[in-house]
Every structure is written in structure tokens, then in C-alpha cells.
Amino acid sequence: MTAEPQVFLTHSESETACLAQALASHLTGNEVIALSGELGAGKTTFVRALARALGIQETVRSPSFALILEYALPGGGRFFHADLYRLENSDQAIEIGLQELMGEGILAIEWSERAPELLPENHIAIRLETNPDESRVIMIYAPYSIRQVTMPDSTLG
Image 1 (cartoon, rainbow, N blue to C red):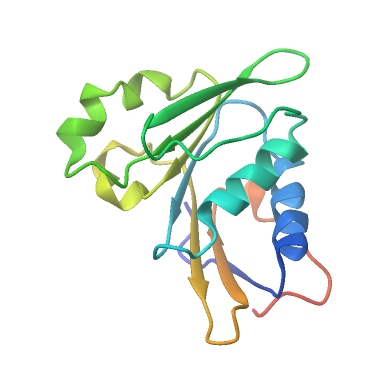
Image 2 (image 1 turned 120 degrees about the horizontal axis):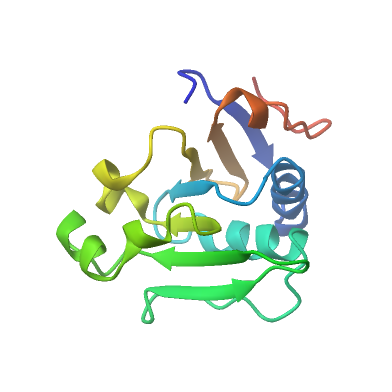
């Protein structure tokens, strides 16, 4: 993972979806995407947009209570959506089988900061922050091949 993030400013769900779509175009099928941010920062919105960009047609629900949901990718492969909000530590993440999913498809993990030591070294980290005007600052820390994500007129740095 790189030390410096690529930083984006989005002003709407559609702009956030454009960023998720740009990221999706770089995914190869076995990435771990670790999302962090306060409650309401847009983690689930980002994951839903990512799933749509990957071709998932069904409704992507928040896995807050199920903890992990699985979706089939068109053309084969799997997309896993995990939410660790209700977990207290990494041991609980291991108990629900989080590590077993790594390398089995694309794994998007909300509240990944609850189990940071389980994340593989080459994971993609996405930090979402809400500004007072409800815009979002989205920071993407990723391996070099993902860092080419661009979004015209929305990059901060």
C-alpha cells in the first residue's frame, strides 16, 4: 500500500458512484477493500455503487445484521460485502469467517478498523469523511495499479 492517498471530493451520491465505478474498472477479482469512516459517511453507498459498477443487478443490502453478504459477479466470481460495526475485535471477525473469504473474490469490508490486523498487506483502503456541507472527502490508499483512478474536477490532491 502506498503512503499517500489519492484524495477526491464528491458532492452527491452520483459523484461517489462515479468514483466507485472508476475504481471498479481496475479490480481483477480478488481484492480486499477496507472502508472506514464515521457512521453515515457513505461506506454502504460506496459499496453499493461499486457492486453496481461490477455488474451486480440485485439490490445490495447493508450487512449490518447478517455481517457478510455474498453476490455473484456476472461472468463468474464473487463479491462479498462485510460489515464489522457490531464486532468488538479481530477474534470475532475470524469467527464469522472473514479471513476465509480473502482471495475468494472481491471483499468489501465496512468498519475494517475493527480488525486491522486481518487485512492483507496489499489491501485497498478507503477512508470517507463528511464535510459540514454534506460533501464527502474520499481517500483511496491502494497498490500502484489502482492509483490510476481519476475523476475530473473532483480531485483535491
